[in-house]
Length: 519
Image (cartoon, rainbow, N blue to C red; front, side):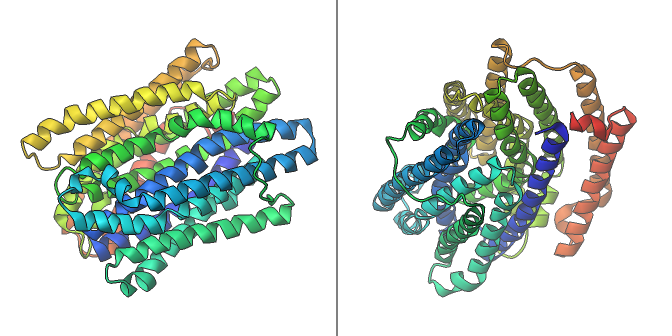
């Protein structure tokens, strides 16, 4: 895949992800407005986060990172029968393992609820609601894992659009569940839990049908003894942890948040959803597109092509990540107010969620870099290095969380949950630095010429963008005083457009041209 095709594939993935994130904003806005924070809504968030975390582990994370390089290696050999056999046995093995995990999760739901929300020990009704919803959401893991396998197969053939569109279907299903299912339950968030399960089924059906038309639909044949399946398993075991380090940190944060003021779990969830917007739009897109490309370069022993592609991806990650993180930091409260501050989501909730969003936004560039740096190892079928970095990252996250949050909690400082977000951001920086250091020390990555000039351009463009955004915010005034969704959205889009235009114009004035993004 050439430079222009890499950029085009990333743009296709990003455009589909943009639709998903916009639908996600609509979903989050309705969820916050209709259900607010605390109580059963907090129980749903925990019940949703646990299988969602396992989805990243089994499906979008470790499985994809281990599966795609092996799949491309077999494709390079040109043996169609071997390819079909591998896909069939891999699908059967994945389905069998995840079914066991789902069954265990449903049986152990009360224990899992206590483990991941230790602060609710004195609130048995919350733990009972969490366990009830966990039993509903856990089977979602099966459907979404098989869907992600299908997405990985499609991505390896260069079809990125439809797999990137499936989250739109998830968000639309969740919106429908809010209006049609939730009112039918005595505890409305239970309807949202059922919506999660239905969304997983619909996403699988969509991609499974496309694989059928391509002649690549797997026939489930549990093949734990298949040599290539065993190879994926060997690669996958270390990646179970390393590819989902951000999710592990979020789960750790959720557990700590359950010990803090009521609503802390919700505030962290909603701020994380906002951080996920640029990460999904750019970071995940880059990581998804670059993994099969790097694995093909490695399989073809093309060291120069591998290095050039990685260098390009790192520049793109910073080009998008720095202004995204800066924008979230400067516009934390306006964004939170615009998306969430309606109905049951109060001005106090808005301020609290903005605190954690400001803290977490500091880690956005590092999160994006990690989306590129980790595939650099997985593409070479090296899963141990990211695992070691992930272990240190999680340890750092726990230590930082305890060190930052404990004094805030003991002194009853409002917004103590923002310390959890700050620890997550700092841990993300540590993870990116560890991965980058190993790549440089091992000689796997050699920065191409021009990084100093590129960094200077980014710094000046970000500085100009910050001045523009702050001036616009000062002129508009207090965001929560603006009335109506349309008014807030209009002003927010105007400020974002002004900041983005300033960023782009300064880069252009300093000599950065579109052709530079294609190499």
